[in-house]
Amino acid sequence: MKRANFPARTAALALFVLSMPILTATAQISNTQHHVVHAVRNVWRAKGANQQVDAAQALRDIVLGADPTTIDDRTIHTVASLLVLKNDGIRYWVVEALGHFGPRARFISPTLLEILNKRECMISETSSVSMIRDTLAHIGTPAPDRKCDHYLLPQ
Image (tube, rainbow, N blue to C red; front, side, top):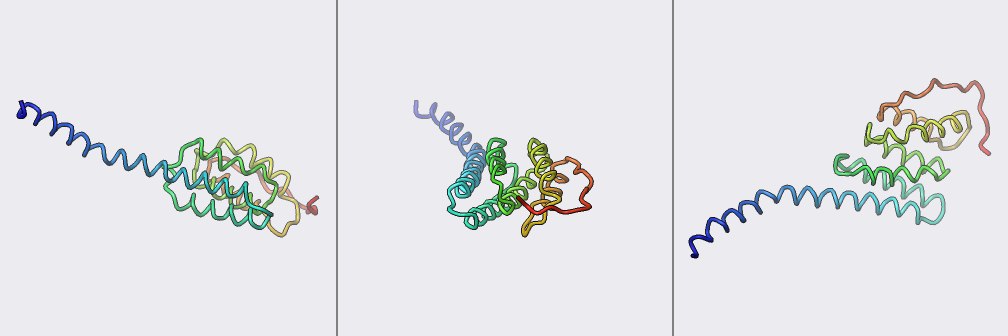
């Protein structure tokens, strides 16, 4: 009887060993996504504009350091949710992070085009406009021609 179990045990062990790369990849995906989601929470929870900008830059660093295939679409949407914040410093870093996902972030094109339309002609100490144009190119959406022959002060 014990000899009959030997092939079953060997097969189970072989299956376990062969599944290790899949389990490791799943853990990596979960770990990377966890770090990205945690960084997004840090932006929302930060007190004051400077801390939010710093948290957004840290988020960008995490995203750019990750393999974009290890981050699912839901997490990309979570990153994009930060674009409702009106601070251009935050937007700059978030937009750069979104560009890392390439065409998978194309869903955000209408929002980026809207921000570009509103902000491009404004004088600002910091501006996300150049990064929005770069990101639109990365995600495969053509940016409109620059249209400013005058500049406005922010309201």
